[in-house]
Length: 190
View 1 (cartoon, rainbow, N blue to C red):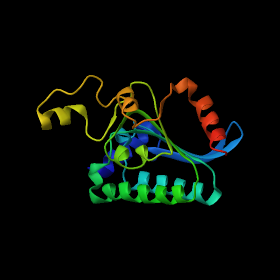
View 2 (view 1 turned 90 degrees about the horizontal axis):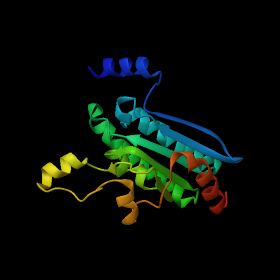
View 3 (view 1 turned 30 degrees about the vertical axis):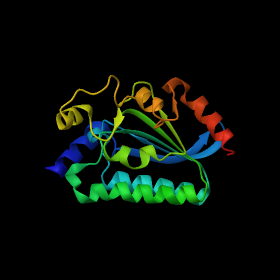
């Protein structure tokens, strides 16, 4: 049962769901921040994750603080059916409001960032960052290979492949992320 799986995962991870959000400062720059945790049911986006991301976007919009979201996800939480899929549209619509208000949004994709999270907010940043060799895509390579019946190009759906094709703006190692974010936020005038 899904409810039992949630309870077991909460007990095992100490988390209440797959994303943590809050406010803080990065090198003195006030920000709204969210980070997904793959340990909680594969970082899947269900109704709680979607609502927390939407509220983080609202907070960013209200306070005019830049938004930074770190994704690590297997996609939509299919156990929630249509409610899970609605989160894609909800988070994307909220980000459109943020863009209209000209509040910066930096998306960071870690390994893996796939499925509905990629199809919604993870690829909608004003700047999209990825960690080296991160798997990023909608469907996984195995599913695509089975669907088209062909082998995929070497490195397909890895961050370097996406950088070469303009889907990712920069590849940044985790130990260089804070400095890079600080520089980007200052360049964005925040």
